[in-house]
Image (cartoon, rainbow, N blue to C red; front, side, top):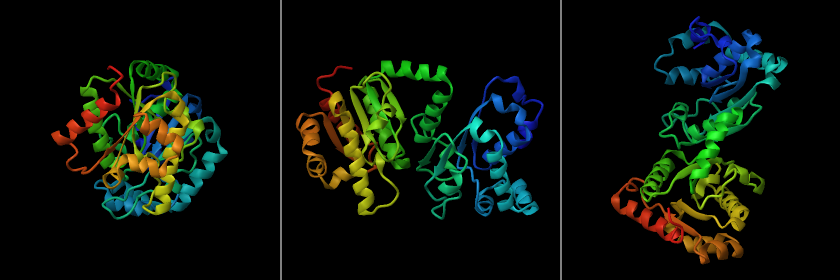
Length: 341
């Protein structure tokens, strides 16, 4: 990658605005390139780095898991990695890049081959002055989104729109035409399979769909603008686990439920309908779940008034079956009975 950046065919100086998107060691190459070429700083609008390690002994895992690591092997033998990374961090902070260039970073949460994560969050987050998010993918799949609605793709798209106003206008135009909003959060690969199936069936019914901004895992009422910017949608499609932190403890589940309750409270006066799906509704009927874990006001406004459907995900492996697809369409039509597409 560094060779490509220095190639005469890649004339970065010819562009008025440049945005770098890099993965893993590619992020190190980009930072090193900018440190060596400070004259282009004014052209660089930002960096978006997926799982780029800024500290730690990550090379051993990278080399072990990579099938084409001959250059990296030579690099790792030629100098002390920890010293190199420490020096890069210091030089970046001391330069004008630390405040001039907006850096957004994403970290993996899943292990590779069920063994270990290659880059830990605390390493990926360093020097990120414009935001940080965890994505439920491993070190390699984090940059291989299954579709344009995958969380990693949506996060990059939304950040791009923040950097370039023209792109934001295109998103606003898309928003004005769609009546169904899909909550953009990290639900993992299995969750994406379920979400994709629901979206397909809703589109078959004739509804136009857009995505929200990416949602933080800890919901606050002040975050409502991440759901929609101008036009209020008719319905939101959302996974109950949107706000689920890592872990399977009772505390983690309680926090998930609390954040979801806060989200509903935030939008309760908008009359937006909610299509929420989860495996949690297999064992506990959706109505009973909301009676037990939500406030009386939320239960009245959403369940009693018919503004919310709690769709059970009984089997992810069978979720694409025609039977389940029919159930999705029936449930969605029931929710939207008074809203014509």
